[in-house]
Length: 50
Image (cartoon, rainbow, N blue to C red):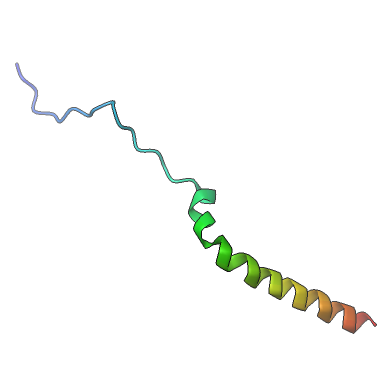
């Protein structure tokens, strides 16, 4: 008897993409923007407290 099921190869296994690795290409854009917002907020707090 022959089976009609498709057999899967064990040679190449697909691995799920890591969340950190998905974000890494956007870091050169995201880090300066977040840094600028953080500096603005810290300056605003410093002026408000003075």
